[in-house]
Length: 306
Image (cartoon, rainbow, N blue to C red; front, top):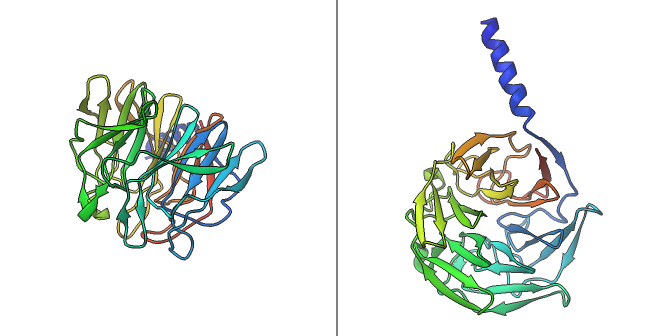
């Protein structure tokens, strides 16, 4: 028994030595169901639900040097469940859901830093929200989510900023919403999600290669989670949080595309879903979200450093 206890203590020590959590300046207000992205050394978030459960158009920018959030120009319209992504020197807000009735939208907006305003670009081929976006080969790759009629989408939509045009690529094998997506080495990984029902979360991981226009199945996530977020740090995909109908996850699990293996990492200090995650200066910032299942908001910002 003593030997077993020592082994458990040693395992715990190894896990805790994998990294540590600390806090950054909280959001200007509690919010959930938004995304985060990094542009020119600052983190951007936009849209979501505020503390009253109302969809918002507000957008904010975080300066790590000052440890401070500032408000920027509002989105052209309120959105939630809307991914943000950066291609080159441009931040994009992709589709998303509008209103309290979760209506999918086909809008694509870019943020013009110099003018502090959002500008429209070619709309998506079809409305979609609660989807994931990865950036590969200088293009946005939009996967999963649902469209009109609350129908799960299998289409993979690719946007080329050079031509301001969309095209459809090979369909995703497992239809799902509330997934997360991340790109490593030119491949987009679609991770987790669910078929609408938070009690039927997936552990599925599928990889899309734009060079071959093919999907491949990868090692499943250790836990089944939808409503999660992800960020890439040192070539590995860190995944955070998620929800069921009655609980939220503190899970922090890391995928290594080079070995197709998952490991567990120090859990979130604040369990939540509908959160944002972004990597900046060797740290992952995990932002806002819902500390309880369903409608709930927090202003917490926590940083993970390996």
